[in-house]
Structures are given as structure tokens and as C-alpha cells.
Amino acid sequence: MPGPFFFQEFDPMRFSFAGLALAALMLAVAPHARAAEPMLVVHDNDFIGPGGPDIQPVVMLIGNPAVRVLGFTVVSGDGWRDEETAHLLRFLEIARRTDLPVVNGAVFPLVNSAERMRAWEQAYGKIPWKGAWNDPKPGENFHPNEPYLVPDNPSGNPTTKPAPGTAADFLIRQVREYPHQVTILATGPLTNLALAIRLDPEFAGLAKELVFMGGLIGNNPQQVTGDADFNSDFNILFDPEAAHIVLTAPWAHITSLGTVTNQTMMSPDLIERMASVKTPVTEFLAKYTIKLPLWDEMAAAVAVDRSLVTSQIEAYMDVDLEHGMHYGQVHVWPEAITPHQGERKVTIVEGVDLDRFYDQFLKAAQFPVKGN
Image (cartoon, rainbow, N blue to C red; front, side, top):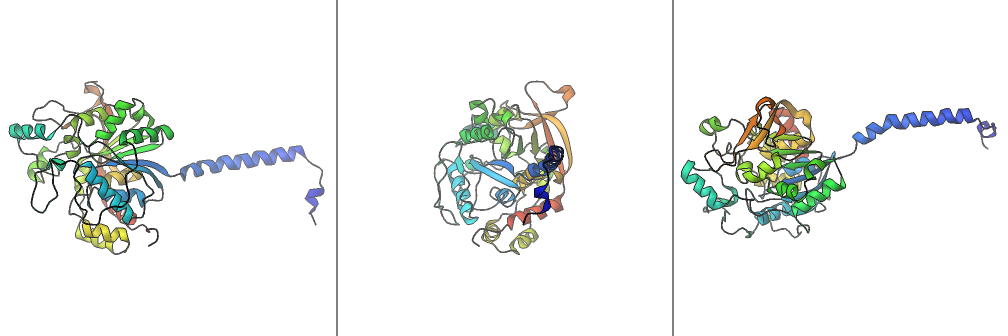
């Protein structure tokens, strides 16, 4: 039997107050609901593998429930595009995330070439790492003159295929579908992004932000005292013209992770800690890992959790395009003396909480794999 409330006379004043209270409650809850919405990311990279620092940043995204990956776009850099695409597709099969689109991008830089790089070396010194243009070596899969060759993958060849279309079109489509919501994470050469900017001048402005791995500042002493390869800023050097186009585009915000990434290393202890939780992903990464700094992994970590940053500076940044000694090197200025030739303000990360970063990497790498 209904309670006495149902027999009461309708009171419009009471109803109005109740409606206002409900509306206030909804407004109070709404910010929390928005905060729970996943971060949207497109990851552009030179995904050479089978494992190592070009594949490992993927787990920082797919292993984080607060991130929604819209897709991956592939660019030549450390290897040739088609070989990289095969490595990424195979890894996503291992991770059981074949639902995520992988889109092919640029095979060659906009202007730079192997011949231009060799000419630079004759005049100014050796470039320790040339990526896809590395000279063939016994036991290595370098094939500088065969850009479309895809050697057999040590972990098995993928059965899935890349999504149709081009990386530049995919990037443009995502920011137009989700205006001012998409973080572009770029951890390889910036050719795909430059092409998107040239195809659609509104592309950069429609993105939420750009986070890129590159932009090493003052690294010449480290080339002498440390590892010359680690301090060559390869992602910029491979396609300097693309980097210039990207760094002078109207992004709402740009974050650079360069020199700070060399503070990391994939150590035996980190591998052991990762492999302590056995999943197809941790076993795969432990088997194919390489003792190198976690360059791209740190960029991905900061992209999804800015609280990791302990120190940073703001500067205007561009790339030297003169085909001289400093070709492909970044330069920074304070606002007071910037040349005002299109340079954009960049947040340069100088310090990261390394303990938290390593913990986050391990947690992401150990995510539960579907069907495991």
C-alpha cells in the first residue's frame, strides 16, 4: 500500500526546491564525471622492434586505464616504416589490442636523405646513429637501400594489417572529431605531423597539446663525456625540416623531453622487476629488451601524468636548417631576444621523479592481458 506521501496535496514550492537541489547535486558531480573521462592520445613513432625503447612506450598508454588510445601512426626513423609497422602490429597481437588502428605514415623525410647525411659527415664528423640509413652490419637487419623490405620478425610475423589511409589524414581526422581534446605524443621524427600541418593549417591548433621526445639542449659536452649516440638528438636530426614546421605551428602547448630522458636506463633490476609478474607482454618485453635509456617511455609517462615533472623551463625553440655544422640542432631563446620568425614557446622538461616513473612503467607493463 502506498505511503502517506502519495496522498498529500501537490506542493509546487516543494517541487521547485527539490528540483533545485537535484540540479545543484548534478552540477557538483559533473566536474568529477568529466575528470573520469579518459585522456585521448594519438601516438606517432618509429616503432622498430621487436622490443626495446620504440615499442615499450606503447604500454604506458595501453596499460593505463585513464588513457584512450585513438590510434598509432608510423614514421620512418630508427627503421623503415613498413618494418616498424610490422613490429608494432606483432606487439599489439601479443598484447591482444588489435582493436587499435595502426596507420602508415611517411617513408622518407621531407628534404633530408642518406646522400645529404653522408655529405654532412664528410664535412663535420660522423653521425653515430643513422636509423634507417645505418650501414649494413653482420647480425643486424639494417637495409638502408631497401626501404620497403620487411625482414622476418624474430617474434613472429603479424597476421593483422595496418588500417587504410595515411598517418597525416588520420591525425587530422582525430583532432577534428575531438577538437582540443587529443594529445599528440610524438616519439620519432616529426614527418607525419609536418605533413598534417601542411595539409590542414588548423591541425595543430585543434589538438590539445604536443608532447615530443627530442630537443636536446646543450648536449655537445655530453657527446664528449658520455655516449655520443645518446646525445645526437636523432628524432630532430633525421628530418630537421619537419621539426621546424612542427615547432612553428600554432599548438596550444608544446612539451619537449630531450636531455632529461638520458637519465634513465633499462637496467637488469628493472627487467627482473617487470618480469616478476608474468603476462605475455612482460615475457615479450623481457625477452626482447635492450639496455638503452627509456627515452620514449619517459615522454609517454609525462604526457599522461604531468605530476612526474620536478623541474622545467619555458623557452622559444626552433631548428637550424642551414646545411652547416649545426644542421638539425635545436636552438632556444628567452622571449626577450627570440627572432620572432614563428618560434613557439616550449616547456622543456629538465627533471622527472625517476622512482615514480619507473614504478609507473612497471605497473603499465604488467597490465592484465585479455584472455591471459
